Image 1 (cartoon, helix red, strand yellow):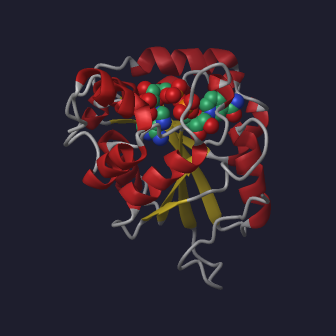
Image 2: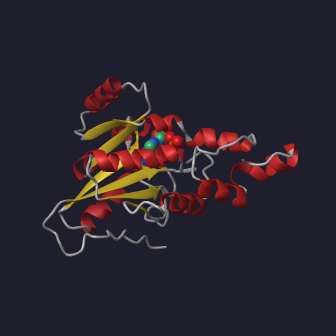
Length: 229
Ligand code: NAP
């Protein structure tokens, strides 16, 4: 399927003011409150007009691991973001064939949108740490500002030093998000173990996981007689 460039509500024909677009990149397997708080606080701190949640189709650094079907990850992203008018979910990366490289996304958006649209790529600080090793890092540095969400206790100075040493002039802003103590890995493990994930992600996402038997919930139910809570 040909990926469709996301439409930006309220951009309209007014190209005179700066339109600040956040692109929330992640695997979102599944999306959780840590991601939602990150996006909301990034939106506020950097005065973003819109945050587009963009689940990666085939995440570049996860080619050897099991990742849930992109349609399921996208559906959960839609459910979790639906109530916030400043959030939107985009199929842009899941509809693109092949490995998902952020540079391809940034290039396509930069080529399509007018110059007054400024791009901010938001993701986890552990992913940002390796920015210099991402595909075409030099080009990426010219196209967007990067917003790195950190968990409390994260060593930002060390991260800064590592990126500085790479010699690639990235513009990176760090924001500390206490809610990032929540992780997708932990949610998947809890579901598999039949434990509660309530209040770690939205009820709509929990319902979707249950209805579609994600994260081996059926197997757990059959073997242990437990239910996702
Ligand atoms: P990851 O390694 O799974 O995530 C690293 C850490 O960051 C995890 O703790 C993760 O927590 C957290 N995290 C991930 N996305 C986040 C977000 N949007 N907000 C807050 N925390 C987040 O990272 P990934 O999902 O594979 O990749 C993240 C993004 O970077 C994706 O858009 C991906 O396409 C891009 N990326 C691009 C390249 C490339 O172009 N070569 C290479 C690597 C990554 P959770 O597990 O709880 O989310």
